[in-house]
Image (cartoon, each protein chain N blue to C red):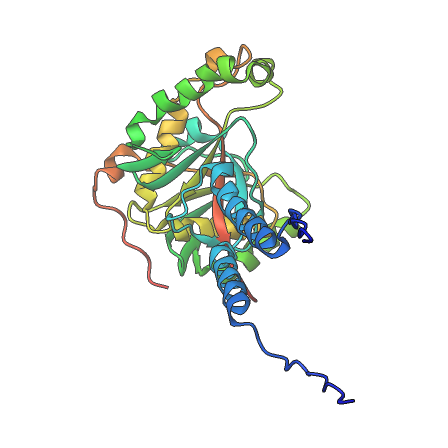
Length: 151
Length: 165
């Protein structure tokens, strides 16, 4: 009797399911890669806003940050970049008094990124009482703004 | 003659197309639920920061996407910053109809009106200053407890997390 030879199936890669899988993985990574940068929130209470409307109003224990740019933020007459400012702001949190109110002000053309960097430095130093001094109508209209001091 | 019995094919669920479909639906809903969640404008380039908590929108918060004083959008509709007081007032006025419980909490002072500002990193301080003046101008006292200060006093700034270091 002739024995039938057993046919051995050769393993092979199925192309169509492979393409399906690759396509789905591609869509998945394309969709979610854009969300990799996490959005964060920095809370600021602005109860002083009506008082800060008038330029020159002083508060107790206030600390004014005048932001010209990300690399030129003026505090107590000294200029810092955003990294240096963070270290400087930490000095205020080491003092026993936590009642420091930080007032942030800027030039009409100061970039919003620079303002957020200053706010970020305050948040990292755990200084949470932050107020903004809006521009007076005169400077907002483009009147001669003080020149940025050299660093 | 022997009659061949008709074979009835039993219906069965095809597993592989089912998995394909489920995965695609999953990706679809995961992707779009994020946009629906918070009326956030994906095209806006936010500034970057290290500090901050996880982004979370509270029910009483209005999200304002701001490119400049001339281009502000809320819920996909474009406005000018000068129009914001009316828009914000209408939002809180409509709460009585859409969410009476939240409106009551506002009136009792349990929650405060608040704005989430999603500003473009390229806008200027002048634009931010205009926005703050508008916040101060928006009179919401009729929706708040007696003796409340006028204006929106709480603003949450958002930024993208700086990666690395």
